[in-house]
Amino acid sequence: SAAELWGFDSSGTSVIFVDSLGTIALNLSTGVETRIPAGQLDGSSVFHQLTTLSPQGLSYQRVLLPGFVGEPDFSLVTEGDAEGRHRHLLGSLSTPESIGDLQLSPNGQYLAVEINPVATPLGYPALSDDVIRNTTELVILDLANDTILLSTPGFSFAW
Image (cartoon, rainbow, N blue to C red; front, side, top):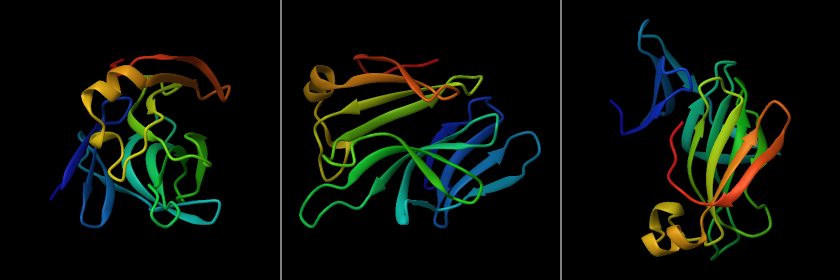
C-alpha cells in the first residue's frame, strides 16, 4: 500500500508512489509496477524524496545526500537511470539549501524546480510561507541541452 503519493510521470500514464520498500511507478493501463532503484551519486547513497519519470524512462528526483554532523542534509535534484546511478543536476553540494517541487514538461525535455537558499533539517516543507514567497527561485532546466533556461523569483507551478 502507498505511504505517500508523489504524482504522475510526465506522460500521465503512471502514478509514482512510495511504499515500505521504496519508490514505485504503477502503469495505470497495464497495472505493471516498476521499482525505481535506490540510488548512488558519486559513490554515496541518496534518499529519494520526490520522483517523476520521463517518457525516455529516466527518473528525475529530489534526493537527500547526508550532510555534515549537526548540519542539514544536502537537498539535490538528480537524473537517475534504471540501475540507480544518479547524475547531479541542481542544488548546491557546498551549502545546504531546500528543494521544493519538481515537475517534468509533458514531452520530458524541461524540468521545473523550486529552489530556496534556506536549509532546514526537514527541508522545503519546513519553510514558512513568508520564506517561500520571498526567497524561492523557480528554475527551468533544458534537459536535452543540460542548460538552465530560466531562473527567476517564484514558486508553485504547473505545466
